[in-house]
Amino acid sequence: MPALATGAGHEPGLYELLAALPSQLQPHVSRPEDSAFLHDMFGERGLSSLVKIHERLQHYEQSKPTAVLDRAAALAREVCKDLERKADNGDVKELLKLLEKPSLTSLLSVHDTVALKSYDPELPPLPDDIDDDEDSVKIIRLVKNKEPLGATIRRDEHTGAVLVARIMRGGPADRSGLIHVGDELREVNGIPVEDKKPEEIIRILALSQGAITFKVVPAVKEDAPVKEPKVFLKAFFDFNPKEDKAIPCKEAGLAFKKGSILQIMSQDDATWWQAKHEGDANPRAGLIPSKQFQERRFALRRPVVTLQRTSSKRSYVVDATQTRTADCISLDDVAVEFAEEIEEEDDYNSGFQLAGFRRSFRLSRRTKKTNKTMYESKKSEMYDMADVPTYEEVAPYRRPSGARHRLVVLVGPTGVGMNELKRKLLISDPQHFGVTIPHTSRPKRNHESESVEYHFISKHLFETDIHNNKFIEYGEYKGNYYGTSLDSIRSVLSKSKVCLLDVQPHVIKHLRMAEFKPFVVFVKPPTIERLRETRKNAKMMSGKDDKGSAKPFTEEDFQEMVNTAQAMETQYGHLFEKVIVNDDLSVAFKELRSTLKSVETEAHWVPVSWTHS
Image (cartoon, rainbow, N blue to C red; front, side, top):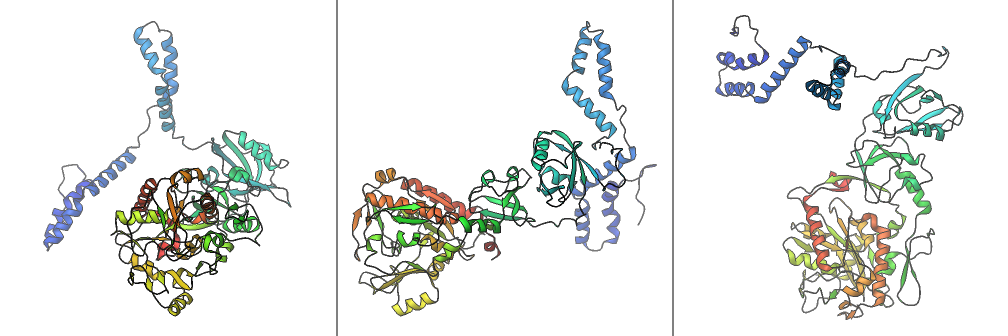
């Protein structure tokens, strides 16, 4: 290749070489597209900028710039002393005022620091009286501000030595990389700690500010920590470390609420994990009970939700304080059974009827004596009673464009207004929302059509489908089966619609699969006082006959609604992703519509297994 032409005595820089390369290579390039590629590549603005930065840095290193003076601050103070003698002069007074400004003195101090390149902290000299036979020690100096150091200590039961028990991920001790689990602590700021209790040592550290010097005997050298993958958990219970008697250090605990998303930083300790709140800017982790430890504790003292009859009337009281596990009435036994039911409220009823919409598969307690077969699901409700909710591993999920919508599940007590909310959603956009068409074994009536009001099938086929677990819920009423099948949900979702479904709360567990990715909304009643105001003209179906008779709400209905809602929230609240209080129907509808919009367009935390499908 011919030499590049440059000016006399001028060495070409890398930038000039790259700029000239395309023309120098031109004779050796046969195809036009290759020539265009070379011009585009070497003419790229980003490459040119990088090359220029490279050359500037090279020039900087070669020139080795040094400060003219490394004591500018001290010189400024000397000048001020000399000027004070001539402070009568106006110009001198102004100059003196400028030199004494805090901003200028700080700037000169920083200049001197940079000039001296004294960036590293100065460690104190090693003590002269170290015994040659003494264990190898390490002198560590950390700077402590208001933030805790992020380490806990314990006393060895056998040797009595004070050991570092735990290093909190992200804290100052962890970031320093100088202190490790198992290190023996000998001194803090020159104070021996062998004869002190851990509480006394903690007090010394708490009162210390600025630089703290530790004298430690290093533990056996550990292998380099393996970088753990990010793990996020959704909490299903509230935790306050200040109220936990088992936590090794209350100050190191991390408080959280039910529904909090926690990033797990360490699971090295089988009993106490380290975690921080997702998105928290504070890098320091805190202690939380591990899943296994919390499950054991819950199994020993978990409150059992019961509904106790207080008299011969239909009044029930929620009891969430008992610890016994036998002789309890399940929430699903006393809340509702199975029937064709519609909540008709004079203030809300639009008169808009939708086929296959008004069946919610519930029996009021009024029909319990005459109908022995209870509401059932494909699994026993004992599954819920045995489950102990603590944490669930989750991951962010946003519905891909064109993918099936998530199933929307509404849960709430009878009479709370779920049917009206579904109806308003369907009226607002019938092309976007849909409901399932239930199955029944009863004969088709004259005014009914197949696959409109119901899917009509034989009793034998219905029982076969029950045996094959094709129903998420079913029940028997006056000798006929009614139920909602999994295929009826799939049918709605396959039409690119949002499927609206209301079920008993214990059925949610059987819908929580990657195929449906259910979003659960709990529709909660307001206070009894507000129920009296808003439902005074409303009616509900009694379910005493096939046609049903509308009856006004009674005081017992209101009490039952509030008590059942409280019991549902206590027992199944960890599965609810949104709680909407139906105080005013129009307000509740707007809140529900806005929530469902966010489910379609924004990322939400879901079980991690749902994101792998």
